[in-house]
Structures are given as C-alpha cells and as structure tokens.
Length: 389
Ligand code: ATP
Ligand code: MG
Image (cartoon, rainbow, N blue to C red; front, side, top):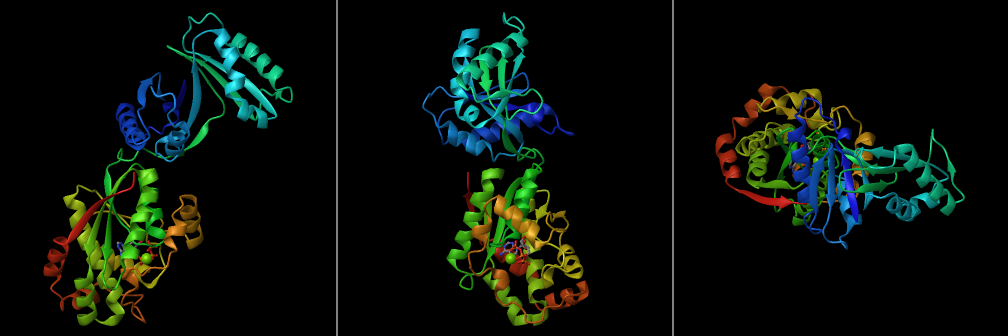
C-alpha cells in the first residue's frame, strides 16, 4: 500500500498554534485531492499520513498537487508494509528501484517509534543495506553525503519505506493568516503578487476591472486562466469582476488627460476596499513596483494609497521586472500573462501622464465626477465566480 507522509516538523510554526495550522493544512489538502478519488487522512506523531482504500488511485497526480500546496516544506511517498523484517527486506529494494538505479551512493536510516519492534535500528540498517547492495552492485554506501537516503520507519501499524524527500512549496497554509483581496489584471505582476501573499498564509479573493467593449472577453478569459494557475498554490479563489466602462468613460470625458490613469486607479482602490470589507478581507494586494510605470512613482503611489484605509500589500514593490518575471516563470503564469489582450489600464492611456502628481490635483479633478454614484453603480454591477481548484 502506498502512502504520502508529510512531516509537520518541516512546517514553520511561528506564532501559530500547531493544531490550528495542521487542521487548516489538512483541510486544504483534502479539498485539493478530492477530485482524484477517496483518500484517508491520519495525523499522528507529528506526521500527516495520506492513504487510500483504492489501490489503483492516482498517487502521481496526488503528489503533483501536494507539491504546490503552501505549508509543506517537504514530503515523501512511502510504501507501507507489515511489521516484520522479512517484509522490509522483500520490499525496500524493489519499491525504491527507480531512485536506486540513478544514485551512486546511499545510506539506510531506520527510525523506530515503536520500541517493541524486535530489531534495533542498526540491525535494520545493516540488513536493508546488504539487500540493496546485492541487488544494485553499482552502489556504494556513503554515510556522510549520500545521493539517496533510504528511510525505514517503524510506526504503530506499519513500517514505512521511502527514499529522498520531495521538495514542497513551503510557506504557510493558505487561510492560516486571514484573507485579502488581490487586484488582478492580466499582466505579469499581479498574479506574482497574489502567489507571494498566499505563500504567507493569506487566503485570496480577487477583483478585476473590465471595460467592455474596450476590453475583450479574451482579456477576461486570461484573468480566469491566471487565477486558475495561482489557485494551484493558493486554493480556490473567488473572483469579483467589476463592470468599469461607465467610470472610465466619465473620467475620459471630464478629467485632465494627464491624470486619467491615476483617477482610474483611485476608483479601483475605493471599489476594491468596499468589496474587500464586505468579504471580510483584511488587506488589498497589488502588483505595483516603484518606478515601473508613470502610475507607480512614489508620488503616484501616495495618491492611490490615500483613498483607502485598509493596508495595501505590494509584495513586488522592490523587485525589478526580471525578478518578477523569474517568479512568474516558476509558477507558470508568465506565458499566460504575455498573451496580448487589452487591459482596462491600456484604454485611454494619457500620452504624457503626470509622474509627480499631488493629491489635491486629483481631488480637484474628481470634483467633476459623481464619485459616490459611480462607485455605487459599479458595486451593483459585479459578477462573482469561483476560479481554480
Ligand atoms: P500588472 O502586471 O499586474 O498588470 P502593471 O505593472 O501592468 O501590473 P498597472 O497596470 O499600472 O501595472 O497596474 C498596477 C496594479 O494595479 C496591478 O498590479 C494590479 O494589482 C492593479 N490593476 C491594474 N489593472 C487592473 C485591473 N484591470 N483590474 C484589477 N486590478 C488591476
Ligand atoms: Mg497591467
């Protein structure tokens, strides 16, 4: 019987109660694996064990999904065998053959949490090592820096045999640190920003501003695709799509061109905050990075920040584009982000945007608009969807 072992010792438990942390993690894993089939979860001796009553269940897919879930630094796929020395010796070499074939050095480690098991750890190591050497004569034992560590764990019900651990996504389980609202465009930066904050344990909601017919359905599809990808790490994301056309047209018709983008960004922030509060989110998240574009100079950021009271998290604020791109490649959002569809930010872009705006200029410009009425109508025209896994 195959199982997956997740050692809680690997989790960062700073400031958090271990039980809560573990419960949230198990809930997140359950949700992510449920569409594969039936799995069973047991937590004991600071290990989460995932098994299945269905012997043909797709463990490859399960471990691929687990690799993306935050809160897991490393995990192992293991074979559970009955608690006898014969069972260990019959199965270890065969089960681990694919890894043993490509290693040149190895060592065996035995862990005995059941002290009643009649063989002591050094004996288990010695005998298992001897069988492996006889079946894979190209191998040598290296106790200091082996390519592969074969672990034999004697626990309550079974003995578990596994090879090297698989690296997990790290971070904290999504939801263990509360909830936040990601302002998501179709660009490169905001999906990366969402991924980074989800990694800190935030559960994500997302908000997207669309301005049909200036922006196309394809552009919206891109946002759905991006969130589906981010959700492999963060878990399901509720997306709020705001109909933004009326606001953008009102800005175009009534405000100085050099301030278009900033007035628009201020509307986005206000609407996002209103939806965030309704959804019990404690912060907003954006993909802004200082100096990247005219609307992200220090002065411009001051103007957009000043209309909201929730904290605004900008995890990529100090990164340059190359650094952001390298994360977006790692999480497979880059190829989606670079598909060329209009975003509402690129509609009505001023030729000469103000790079050192003052808040008073924006307040003056907004006097020409029915700010409250526009926001109220936008809030009444939101589509809600569930994205991803
Ligand atoms: P991105 O790559 O995330 O699009 P960007 O560098 O293109 O960022 P801007 O277009 O100025 O920068 O947007 C800055 C931030 O504002 C984005 O990272 C995102 O958080 C938010 N934002 C921009 N456009 C939208 C939109 N249409 N809907 C929701 N949020 C948006
Ligand atoms: Mg953008």
